[in-house]
Length: 260
Image (tube, rainbow, N blue to C red; front, side):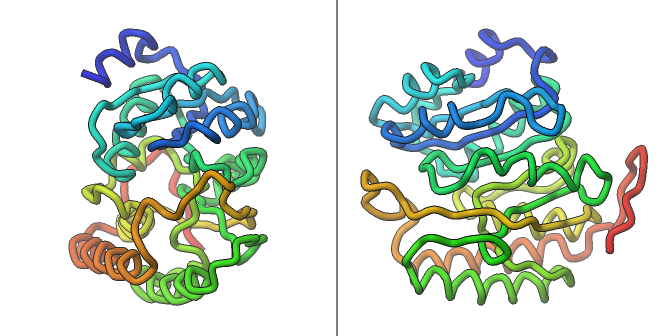
């Protein structure tokens, strides 16, 4: 019903070539700021912002709409992975060629979206993730920092491609990639998306990005404590690798990119 209402208000095939999908759950203090900071044009591409609200109990939806976003307000909380899948589908329905994502909590720099999409436009990659290790990490959680190192090394082994930051919240990809890979995770979709893309023959790249400290409104991650987060992240990564490791290494596309 939420998707149908969204497309009734924002018809299919009429969107911008670059859709910036933002999943949002109880992000009333920051979502409007993030939406307003997304550039209306990036690398010559017109952008539109699609905020998928994940059963929020505050005014996330109204704040996002007031800032200029197209809002799909899902009444039941289903998890970040689930609402991102919906956001990808809505972006494709609107006619997006490229899809980018950024978190709603203000930890990432929306102006860096142009840097993230650049390798795709240059025909150097199909999927580009930001990397706080290549750029700047202004957070103070040492355990999370260690987790980035460990899981980056793990996923590098699984996909045979160097990954420095497996869970960065700012990324971009060709729109057709989101339809070609299998996405099942309700919450820990970052590793699933990256691993599935690599194992299905899509070319991966990373660019330096900035991760700021969480705002004063934040009371902690919505994904639980560090230990539980790490266990579930690892489980999602191994499940995806096991599921997709026999997938074809190539796919049909107008111009094949040679992965380095």
